[in-house]
Amino acid sequence: MWNWKPFFDDESISVFCDLDQVIDTEADENGQYASPDCYRPLPLRFGVFLSIVLKKKDDITHYLEERKARSLPLKGYKSYRYSLCLAEIDARNMRCRVLPAGDYDSKDRELGDSCIVTDITPPILPGINDEWKPIRSKRSHPMIRALAKMFFPKE
Image 1 (tube, rainbow, N blue to C red):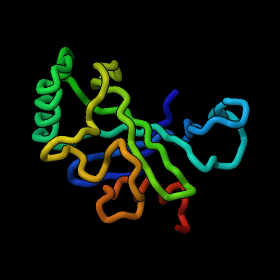
Image 2: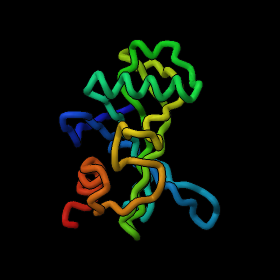
Image 3: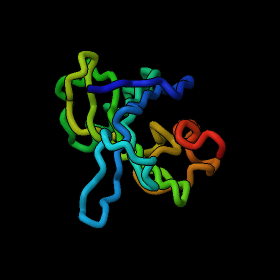
């Protein structure tokens, strides 16, 4: 069950995260991953699910055009509402990457695989991508820094 908490909002996007679903993204010595239910300290590399809502109609149109250009399905995308992503944070090196997962409509039905985090011009979400990037970089999106502040408030 999702427990979405708003943590970032600007003129272009609203972003929510599920703090109840923080997951370990590095396996232990036995190849096991700690579940969200394990009462352990925050792992050195972890992931948290994000829901990214595009606020501008132009950005949504641009996103749908990108899907079309990539020959990705558009069925149901007239009611596109948000994209689910996994933000992975490497606390050792203070780096982050965002991995797209799926797109959803206004009734929370999955529409298809997301390509919201893509290398296109102009970028839909500048400073957010699927490659490891420094959190504190001026080129990182402010949403990345806001996410890190939730987990590392003194940094």
